[in-house]
Image 1 (cartoon, helix red, strand yellow):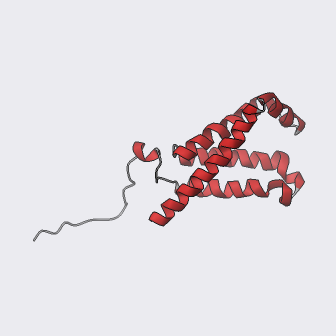
Image 2 (image 1 turned 45 degrees about the vertical axis):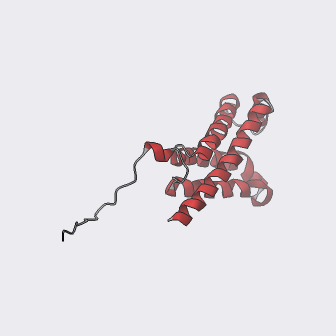
Image 3 (image 1 turned 60 degrees about the vertical axis):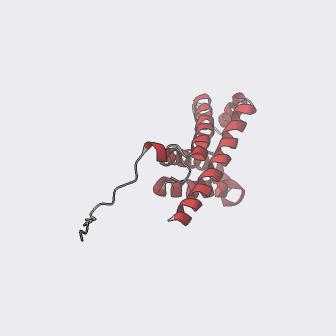
Length: 141
């Protein structure tokens, strides 16, 4: 159990850093540059999509690092990566195209399904899941 949680922690923090830096870069270089890039990819409503993607990456990355809403954020990031593959990466092929996106989807899928509670803020807001179907008897001597 400890090994799994430690592995999930490492995965969560690394994935969070990757997305946080990608989102930060979109805003640091100027969101208009991102809008122009998205327009060049023929993404409809590029202005809204650029802010949405940049915000999800920036805030979602931070949330993963601190362990807040890990499963929900992971699902959002999977959606962003699927969108990136469909609009940009697929035409470039696997190598140099969408292999990195696919790796990020795999990491986010693990976190979405398994969660990550070690050193996570989520732990403060939720209780440990109860085991269903288990009856415990107390012994009296």
